[in-house]
Image 1 (cartoon, rainbow over the protein chains, first blue to last red):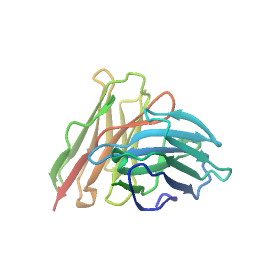
Image 2 (image 1 turned 90 degrees about the vertical axis):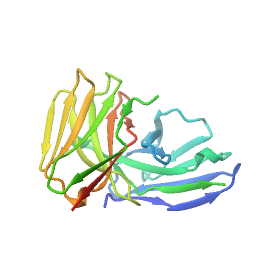
Image 3 (image 1 turned 60 degrees about the vertical axis):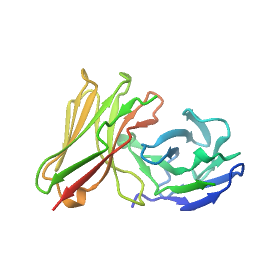
Image 4 (image 1 turned 45 degrees about the vertical axis):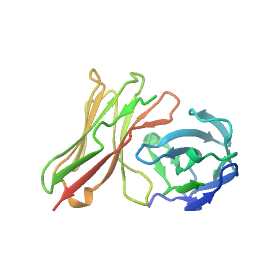
Length: 114
Length: 111
C-alpha cells in the first residue's frame, strides 16, 4: 500500500475524445510524475509537477497536459485521443529527504481508446 | 530512445536458487539506479536502489550490483521464493530527476 490513489481504474473512450485522469497522495509529498505504460513496455515519463508547476517533460505532444493543485493532487488531461494512447497511466509521488529518489506509484488507470 | 534496456523479457528459476536480472544503460549521466517490482493490477513498488558512486548495495535477499564501465547493473535474489514472481523494472534517474525505465523482466519462481 503506497498511499497513492488513482481514478478511475478503467476507462473506455473513442478516438478524438478528451480524458482526465486523477491522482492523489495521502503523504503530502509535493512532486508528482505521470507515466504511460504501453503493453509489454516499461513506464514512459510524460511530465512532472512540483508545487503546481510543470518542471520536467518527456517526449509527449502538447495534447498531454497536466495540473497540480494546492493539496498536491494532480490531473492528467489528454485531448484528441488517438488509438495509440491506449495504455496504463501511472502517477508517482516522490519521497522527500534522504529517500528523495524513490517514487511511490499508484495502481494506474487503464485507458482504452476505440 | 531507449536509454535503459532489459534484454530478457522473462526468467524462470527454481525456488531456493538465485535469480539474476540484468539491465544495461546508455546514458553515462545517470547517477542513481533503482529496481521496482510490479504485481498484476498494482503499480510498481520500490525494491532496492544504488548510487553511481557505489558498486554494490544489499538489502536482505536482494543485492544490486553496478558496473559503471560496462554501463550494466544486475539484481540478485537469493534465495528465490515463489512470492518473488513478478515483473521487475530497472530504472535510472536523469539529471532532471525523472526516471527512465526498462521494459521489464517477468520472473517466475517455481516451487
